[in-house]
Image (cartoon, rainbow, N blue to C red; front, side, top):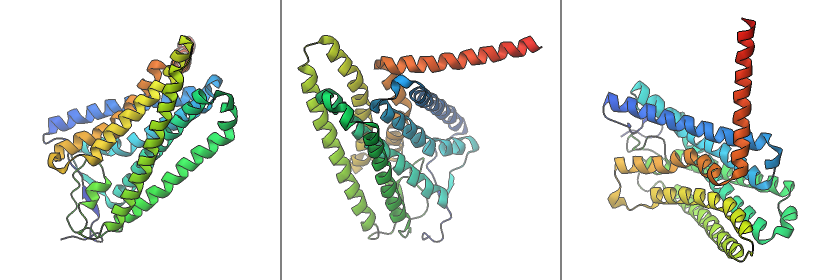
Length: 321
């Protein structure tokens, strides 16, 4: 059996068995990828360019959009290339890089969602202290702490996973490199260190989940006590998109990693991986733009400027001719 020192590449799970279905999957993934790039790109540009959105809530929304771009760009381009060129291979270094960046972006997204729940809690439950608790320095510190912590976790997970001796072949039963699938290739009894790291990460994630739940319980209690219907509507319009994104992220990720082994199969694992790694980055911009008028107005302004510049540039070219 090959060991980790003799493995130069891994073989990923093909998206389809026939060439026609492979090409169909390529175009489908390309459409999803372009939609994610467009949506998250528009939100990032709108938040960066519109001075009205230079607030803590939209600062973290900008972070979330950038993380969504990084997360989906880690998995889909390689999957699309394999489907287009009818191959399954990914290099050893490429697999390690994919795991590192995927863990980093996914963990950072969860950390930012946790910080955003705290931001909403302070804004609604402690509005008089919002300027003090969520000033620019505090926001930058929380963002830096989140990115730094998940960077360390990503390095530890990647180093621990690829320090294991791999003696079960090089076939990864997923369309991208995933830690649980790599652990299945390791020699039995050698992956205890990575299991300990996974348990520690799970405890941290559970702590974040409890924090989010407690924050939103207090938020909804405060909102229901508001005498003004307009105030309740404004509070819900900023909280419900965040709650929808958190729910989508957690439900798909928890099902992916905690589903019973009895229902596990390559096709099931593939579908679940798409749900938690591809769908949230593509859908998050839509969720945030549906109920947030400020985001919709800023995105519309960015699109209008782009279209007007394009039209003006084209008219200049026609006039020159």
